Amino acid sequence: SSSSLDAELSELVLNDGGIDATLRWLTAAREPSTAAFVPLIEAAVSCGDDDALLAAGGLMRKRGVRPDAALYTALILGRLRLGQTERALSACDKCLSDGVVPESRALTALVRALADASETEAAISLCRR
Image 1: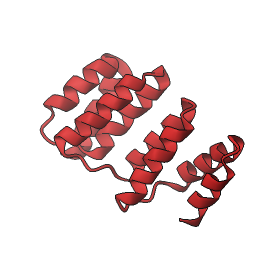
Image 2: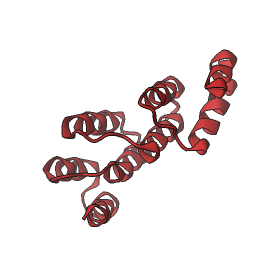
Image 3: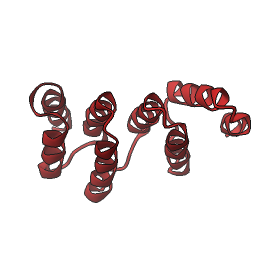
């Protein structure tokens, strides 16, 4: 089941093999869910590993995994945590264009980051969507 795969993946990310092992696991998994990628994104952010974030995105596209609100939220918050406000905004734009609304905590954090970066118009534009 999807939840047992997600639990197995979380265990792998947190305790066994880290990011590289997790990418190998997701490549081999029959049907990884979007939730399976959230621990990978969080681990990549914790390590400051931008290459792993990009690899996760590429693998999701390759495997046909459609990101959901939780995954986009993790990505937006992760990009912000890495100080990548423009990339976070791009992820949010992609999320919204896919018809998915990220969690309010991601939107709030992004608006604050844009305002802090004196990107007032971008912050206002995001609020109006």
